[in-house]
Length: 375
Image (cartoon, rainbow, N blue to C red):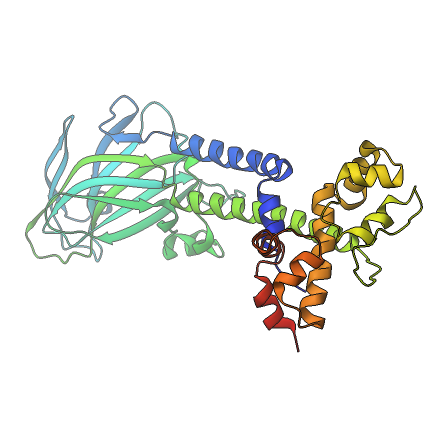
């Protein structure tokens, strides 16, 4: 038995049922992707209408980091500072927060894009401060800090950071008794602040500088695109396999049983009403047409056509060809008759047409079939 039938697969792919079943899935996927792709970047800088920009250092912790210069224009945020030596982890940085409100909803975004330059710096640390999305207990902070540090290259460069790279620092998780802090991701629906500072840098006594040229939240849609395509493929494959399995079961139920008898081109008397039996016994007659069958059996052409379609899910010509194919396969295997003689014995007028019909039905030629199956 042939495991995969190309003819059936092609029939399913071209069927209205398959097309109308898969089109809504494709349209839904396109609508989802269109929606998320159409989300525009949300600028954080420059955007003085929605954000305010401040500077901070460890001076508040009785250290001696000194801010040399701080500048905010429409095109740059600049911080020049000299690291102090009174604390183990000195710091200075830029704080960006929503203007006139405690938090801002950026829940549609999953990526931070920042264009900056660092002098005498090896890296940058960025902190996202959000409202505490956990069940708030008295002695827990009302905010959550998510931190990410990364190496920077010399000169002005643009860095894209997926928000799932930001993690709760160990010290913050321990202080607030947060278990499995590494599994918690930032809730950008309640973003309260963004802090940018230097990282990976030793205190060499030199002046250090952070220059930010732009900052924005955006959507990285590559993971979503992969998921949507994968899900659509799975659903469409399931639809195809369901229809294919149903078709195979239906084909198996439509097994045609032929009562073989010696073929001698003699018309066989048959009950007028049993036209199916008449066809089965006279399929080798190359003059076997709808009109001829109707005349010999007394059954109207319309009834013959409807009955064949209902019982065997095909038209009369296909049904007769199936009978002829079954007989030709038997003769190819059980006899040594030339293919040309088999052609005429089963009811075809020429061998070329017989070869074409046989190959369309079996996917191999008559000679290949004989070589494969004849013992």
